[in-house]
Amino acid sequence: MVDIIAIDGPASAGKSSIAKKISNYFNIPLLNSGRLYRAVAYKIINKKININDKYEILTIAKSLKNDDLKSIKLFSSEIDKVSSQISAKKYLRDQLKEYQIEFPKKYGKGKKFAIVEGRDIGTEIFPLAKFKFFMWANAGTRAHRRYNQIIKSGKKASLARIYDEIVSRDREDINRKIAPLKPAVNSVLLDTTYLDIEQAFNVIKKTLSN
Ligand code: DC
Image (cartoon, rainbow, N blue to C red; front, top):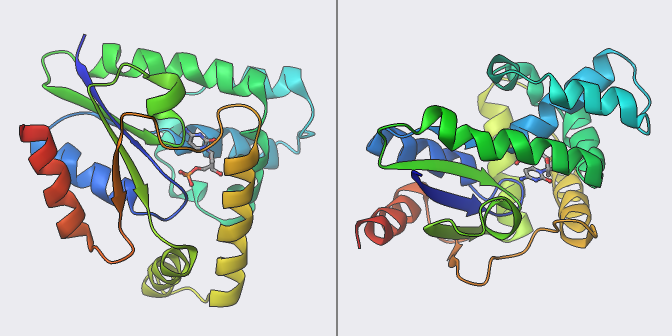
């Protein structure tokens, strides 16, 4: 099987930017696992499904396609919130695990690595991943990053609100009983509070070359 690079960490720690850079640099497939939860949340909202309707939620999760993960509509504060809520459901995590396990088998053929980023990749999904990174940054720094991203895209944003949302999502991700956000025991810790994306990328590149 292809070697897995697992990147975990909280919202806006820079995981997806770094993962994209690694994916481009090594020409390897990338799965942003948060998009699975977001795509399910998107359909729940659109179809006005009750958040406790296990049958409907599982039906959506089972029928997820790669294209569902590509939509830019997956990024809104409503989806941030609903995806975080549904991510606490064990039956959903189990179902989405199947998608994640299949990913490197499907897309990693002939590649040096496959890269998967999320919250529980190194702990639950690929505990035997060859490389594990846990990216962190303090909540204030992450809120600033998110704020700048939104402003850059021409939209309005409130820094105070973004900060509150980040703190509350951290709380939910860290405290949920199933697959909580935590560093895998054998992961490389990368605090990006004072590192820019280039510096973090260089650390990862070096680790992968060893
Ligand atoms: O990484 P993200 O912000 O796109 O993730 C969206 C939500 O999905 C986030 O609140 C936590 C959840 N998630 C998860 O529980 N496990 C993962 N492996 C990835 C994301």
